[in-house]
Figure 1 (cartoon, rainbow, N blue to C red):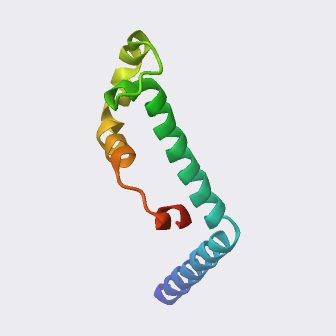
Figure 2: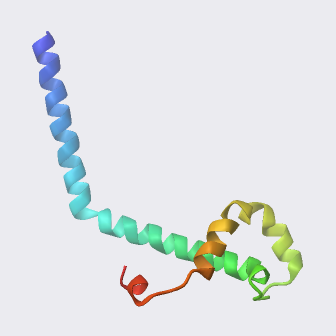
Length: 93
């Protein structure tokens, strides 16, 4: 009984490893690209709605204030990303 349990655990680990390998070959790059695109879109949305924090008034303050509760958790990282010095190597990554 114990030997059979060890065998099924071993087969389960091999199956998970094979599934991870296939995932890495097939969809890992597209998943990373989708997450990077999503992050860029979120930062663009915050720039459009809360741009007056950086001196870029695009929307009237009324709409910015209505969206403020949803944006507050992301403001510090957004400001850091927008005001960071850019380098040529940033475009390559």
